[in-house]
Length: 297
Image (tube, rainbow, N blue to C red; front, top):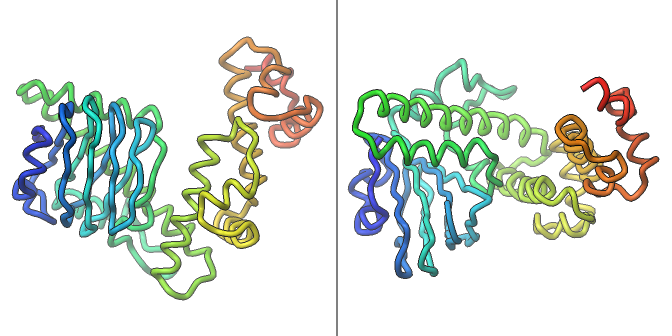
């Protein structure tokens, strides 16, 4: 693993040979003045921001990258980035092209789907992902390990990068399986619709504790309500409303086992207005009331 300042990435992509990277590279630094990475073709990469915000353009589409999310860049995609505020700390992880190809084509990790296909790119998961705690920990660990030249730290960094890469490949395979549920003939349309559905799904995963309407989620996914509802159920085998309830009940279960908050407080905290409705749904899903679950946990 090689850590370099962002300026090395801005000035040239020769360090990663354009679409090919001969090692794992991490480009990062705290930006002192507005900075811009010109549009170029990228190797398989992961973008995140440890502090601040950056504007990213992937294949001509703009999005905002903040501290609570990350973006996967598929090999061959065009990438441009602009950092407007001083103090921002962007992180660009470029994966070793040879290693990622070996792992990606492993029959153990990526067996063929029902149509006999294996993943050849990461287009299906090339959208905003809201950062989970483990990824943030991974990034901080990698940057800390990169400060040392000890062989043990280098080996540990390689293991962390392999772990991230494995997670992405498995997620890509899962996305390929789920997206095949969409009754769409044209491959490019299927990929676009799946990514839109995932934008709405990810938004729900971030905002499920607040009042959420179908119109809000459909707007995030850039679809009308009827179209979003039909395709979401087609892809994920649940309606958006059912998925929202699953998220809330799962978090309620976590709060019941890790906090001393009263059941009524948890009910309101996760977005349920009626305690009786919450109790009924919780029991239906887990076979036990919230109060009883707390005692057993």
